[in-house]
Length: 184
Image 1 (tube, rainbow, N blue to C red):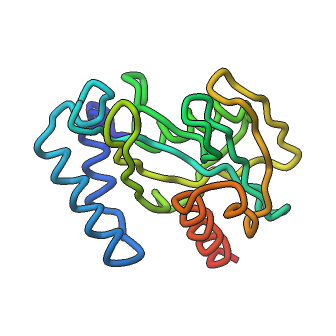
Image 2 (tube, one colour):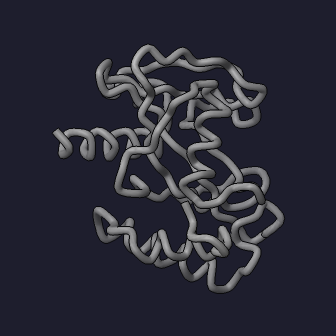
């Protein structure tokens, strides 16, 4: 959570400054995000036409070896939960957790400790999304509920994600499982 009096823009800047990228490509992207935020005081909000920071979370059940994907209503693709930051979000992590909870219908999600898992920049109908991606751990026995933003939800074995989702989701899933394995 952001320290009292810290804006979401300041929180995102701090998160990105402190984040240890797993490789050189991710570090270049991290620096691009920081440049974007430095140049755009409104860079956290959908109204920023030059692109904006978004927050997402791959919901996982490590005990079952699965990830919960959503069939996005507008894009028609299987993706992790996520979207635009909102004024009520206290931090980037809170935005990711809020999106994951809203879109999965699962209560009791908690983010994998250690901050973001990876970054992914992609173009959407509204603008470039500078997505900061987290992983959210589902509680045992979690039951999902389809939201208005989804056409469907599906638990997918982490090694089978590539059969339904694009390469960005595969990279997020792969990195999430690497981090989960390192915690054991």
